[in-house]
Amino acid sequence: MSEKNQHGKRTARDRLAAERDKHKAAERRRRTLIVGASVVCVLGLAAVIGVVAANSGKSKPAKAGPAVAPSGAQGKDSLAIPVGKDGAKSTLTVWEDFRCPACQAFETVYRPTIHELTNAGKLRVEYHLVRLIDGNLGGTGSLRAANAAACAQDAGKFSAYHDVLYENQPKETDDAYADNGKLIALAGKVSGLDTPAFRTCVKNGTHDAWVDKSHQAFQAGGFSGTPTVLLNGKNIIQDRTMTPAKLKQTVEAADQG
Image 1: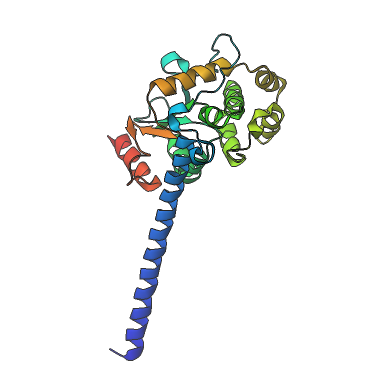
Image 2: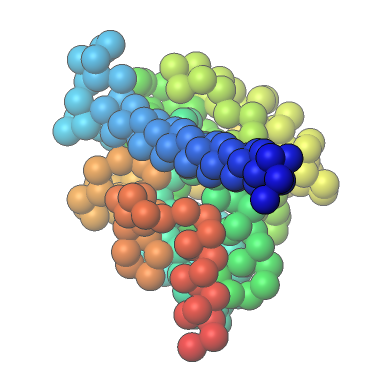
């Protein structure tokens, strides 16, 4: 073999090795992002303000009144907002807080795959909205954003507005979502959502008591932090081998029976 050919093969091997190293590094960064952010949500910045997970969720309750579930809510006490086909063979249960950076991290990594699977009718997602960060850091942004998302569900626009809230999420310590005006302004990013009915629902806190009831169910479930994500009952956040590709493979295998 000529020296030139040998050099060419070495160069190709070097490129492949470099690509493998690059992929491994990207995967490590992805896992660090989700795990690291999850610690922030569980502890509520305990190192800074002395709040521990055991005290999480002790936010002031919403205004007194009946728990008005949003249109189409399902499950026990109508606390789940469903996205996807009812007959899908796999169900992803997501407990989330719109102020939580780990929830945003999960969305950033998994959203394209989740959308692909729900659109194909292979996966059904049940979203449960909680206000963990309100309890950890104070404020009402988690509650106000969750109520607004429930109002979007009434309008049949939950999924799109859900994504907008994460795309525009303020810093965890910034209670910007406590401002109903901001939440209404963000509705302008979803076609057909900013209507008088939506504005009234947001301003009146129509679903506030329902959000509190959902948060109580989260606490009763013994979950340690947000996001808590269960695929057919199994916690995938705790599964260090889980990736979007593996999630897709698992769901598609179940779909094929």
